[in-house]
Length: 279
Image (cartoon, rainbow, N blue to C red):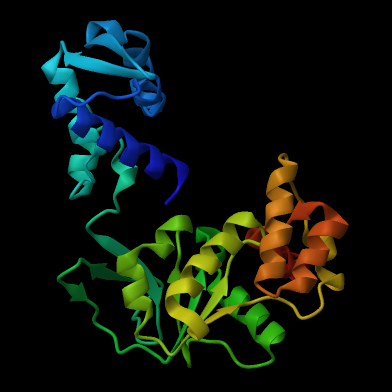
């Protein structure tokens, strides 16, 4: 559990003690207030009456029951995204419906198919191939043939609609539980993500759940690709984290590329290969 999760658990415990008329350390109670309650934290005298009883403990009386109820609601885990929005942060909870764009070999025109997913329903009209190619960004997804050619060269095997379904990852959306469950129908999942901290973190999340099915598509020798590392990293901590994570994932050549260039490589820059060939 992260820092925010620990604070919520502590806040919940303090609220329960106050509700049970137990004494607490009021300063610690206030320190566990989430940022969204920073104004209320400054105005705590409007909401609580505090009487010291010694040993850094205080007896708390509730002056504003509505605000106290709001705090109690906040520390309870929302049951859905709507409830999370009511509590002030819809991003605490995943959406209940996922739409996945898929290119497959049974399409009748240039439009990808939409797969509809909920916890109780899946609408998918095509028979999946054994292999999935997961592309992070829209521009590279809609140029999937160029990305397939690159993946074929790097993996030294054919990657095409003949043997692979191709999906738009849409950034962090690709790691939601609904999507991970859907990916599991494939025997092998190839990942073409940005070569940066975010891309590695998403790959790590997927690998945690999908284990050895997951493959990070990358060149075996990065030396010819160092000129494509063009994304300036403003925060040196991000670069350091990316380097460390690459090593943990046994992507040592990528870790070295981060050190040599001090930059990240975005997927879209790889499309310049095709542009140069056309020009």
